[in-house]
Length: 159
Image (cartoon, rainbow, N blue to C red; front, side, top):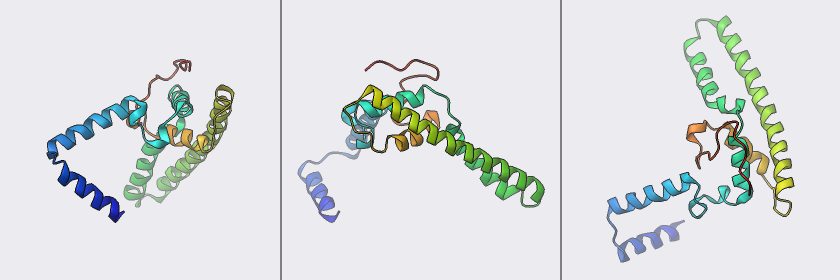
């Protein structure tokens, strides 16, 4: 880690670039990554199998997409419903049931998507593919990186 920091510092001294140029370059890389350009994707998102999984997840509506809003509801319930324990217990019970349904949906979708990927890409490796699908589905659609290429209900593009 320290070696990398020293090397980075030396490179900056050897090739001085203004802060604005670095920010502009970072913005361009981020935009290319968000658009799905394979050269700029993070290692976890690279490859045709991962692109296929993203398309399958993005072409469906999932309860998992409600995970973050549900977490906010639980937080608000814990803060503001302390004086009303009856209501707080119902909200907590409903949120727990919703979380269990979401977890079940995540497991089922992960297995189903892995099976679809195995049929479409028989020569690839599939380690962690179900988890990748679960994490992608649990993100709010507008915040997914890279951005979804398909809308809910659209067919999945061919290879």
